Image (cartoon, rainbow, N blue to C red; front, side, top):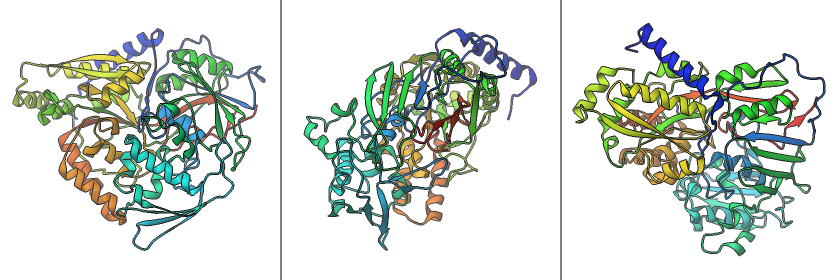
Length: 553
């Protein structure tokens, strides 16, 4: 890396230190999207810490799990939402044909007890369990599976991005009540993996009675029609959502009788609540690495840490203006002091990454181009693009997200050195989500976690032209070669061929820079030491298996 003299590095560190300290009394928060999960910070306002937790805590209830987040929940339709804040809940309300358990990235049977695959890798025959029922008591049948997938395609939002290229309404053959054949239009390598996603949740076909003009989207925005281990009991928007254990659940009995998902806007408040035992766990995106270090092992709190597939990234809207020019995007990529960012904002609890496929996942390209910190090169590129006299841009971040805030401040400082004036705009999460998916942004700062462990998931959403906007191609990127490679890789069942295609895509996108990939952070979840059985899944870092967690003092 260039331009890394000691004084410059010290100045950057002091800048971020001042930001972090000054943020301790202000607003905090976060966001998350499918692929997205935010990361935040909390100030240390709890007073003196003690090294030992009390022997007993009056707030302890082994049957109730209190989970705090500063991320509101947009809606609960599995086919219409792209927000991880929604997914955390809908995974508990619905079942899928397959699932992912614990820290494993291998799909396991769920509603489908077993399945057969034809020799041409196009026809999948699923044998459903016969004892599963929806919350209204009606059985889960092959008809429900057909209804759920065809509705996902008809809604034509996030879920359709996975399925509509490979299945349609003619793909389904109901053999009997508990056997269904799904014939793909063409082989789709990650098909079984996709069936463990929230988009593949199985909905009660009775929803059709409430379709109205929008296929029931408005109806189940605040209701549920699932068969999962929990039932939606109540939802006071912006305050608390309550889940109750399903007494007739076909599977393993949920360990927690009640789940309270509590909206706590201030991470510092959530920290105090955790230390007092008023809550059991804080959203792993709320607290900064610095404050987590202060919390771990004190006041009855432990921090569970694991590698994850989360990516923090900056989409650049390529539809118009200066960012439509590749040289401008490359200049910005050269303007960022990545080492200072990782050290000062993430405190070393993250790695640098060059593309949309995280390190550790099949198809990761370790040789994808990484832009060095080179201010001279950045200035030259801006001059060649016609912006030698400077440039004004905006970066959008969601409120209650201190790591995003600190990252934006560092970017603002870095870009000023090459004549780019960056204005930081902060929005509530639902407003932010609408802004970036409708293309009203210049930059955004977002996080992404895959729902199935395959490059198809990340790269299809980030790179395919059909995913622009609501499909989470937030750069509104379009490249015919990338589209072709993605479609070819999807249709292949040869893992070597698929890996080669995905690595080539990462090379192309690194050259064109629709996104700047900021970091691949480690997952750190703060919880009470009485919480047992919590495991971090690298692809669903925001996911909490409430139905398997227990509590014991």
